[in-house]
Image (cartoon, rainbow, N blue to C red; front, side):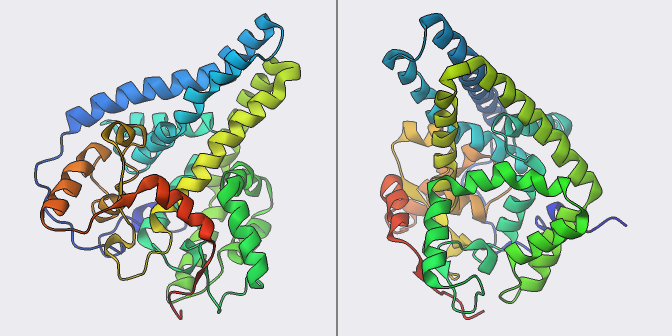
Length: 342
């Protein structure tokens, strides 16, 4: 029996918690987005190849780590927002015009970060459909949640923030190696069934974990990532902590940025997300992740279309946006009180 696809359901107009999409001030420019994506894909894969192959060869030639060589990891880490942003565009079908090429590129990029593409895509589309529902607000301590006392939730929150989210994504494919009933039970317990949509959310996640096609793809992609990183660790040899540090720093950004636009956001805020202010050059590096509210209100538009929407909103008298870095640091204030009695 084939289970309902949340990838399809999550994109239904009635499912997305957002304002009715406003007409953009100018039409999207797919050709511009395609050219930008092609350049950024080349940059992301170059950074990845340097991290996994180029740097260990240079370290070996130099006889070990040097400060100059370690400093070359900075561009690799800074490429992480672009790498994730490209995967994100692929999730929304905006990475390439051809559907198969879009899927192939996004999956290859995910394998490069050792992220399970199908699970990440499913989770992201569920995030769009059920934004800030109980399962989707790690920054909130809901009194009805059976997740344990507040101190335990606090430890889990900071652990997630400091790289735990990426670690969980690295280990998630293990579910595809378990018997289906165990995988379903773990997912059902982890997601819970809180709030008005709780039972439906839990069912969709459990069905995804049990789907045989997705389980097979998860195993295939995970083994590809394991092979890639096993070869890289072998190339690093005694300098393997350098690769581990690079992986952690990339995972740290992914974990910090994941809930950043939603931290402390109330259910009645448009898009249930916020936009932030960054210098224009940094906007390209982030692939406009700082305009996340615009993305939630217009999820079918490419990332290059978001600045025009934000400018139009600002011209209409929208409140000034907070700084992106300040918003990232604000997450360290910790858990917020419950925002919905559920």
